[in-house]
Length: 230
Image 1 (cartoon, rainbow, N blue to C red):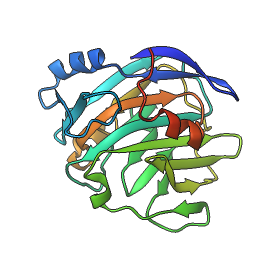
Image 2: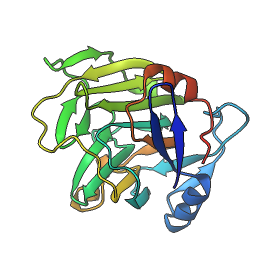
Image 3: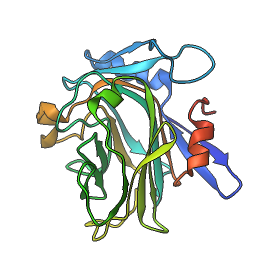
Image 4: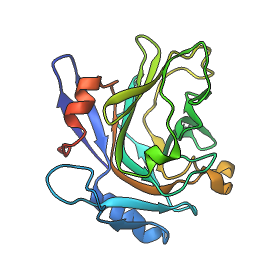
């Protein structure tokens, strides 16, 4: 990965972007991982390349991520799914190998600082919820997950449109992403939990980005089809 600085009218932030060269090197060590040109390029400006996950344990692991240390975050990616599992997990971030701090488990749940938030069940903490089905994930779409510590709000966007928002309480861990953690694409986390195949993602991921701020809807819309300078 590489680090670069990005500024907006309200604040400056740091983005950590997984580059194609890094992903290519990882794929050589993971036989189930491949690179190919998507039939519908996620980014504007010509055809790109995407990581392909077969759902059999192939994944991308980036350890000792530096320069994060943030109470806010935004995870962004272009994604399409080939199949659906109860534990479908496109990405996770952990400081302790056995305790993921952040993980998106598809339609079923989102793990936020150790708290499981259901994405398909009404709850007092959930303000906005638009039901999505597997049919919504078979084509390329852009997804962004943001956490704003100033108002304790988790938001999830699909193609720049808000489809889930919640203000969870009683988080078991302080809402903070430390540096030197491990980012995993295509699986829940290293450790015993990864022995269960349902955790493993089957599909394509492209243009994955991790920001140390909670990006606004306008920032997500304006940047989701642009390449990020590194």
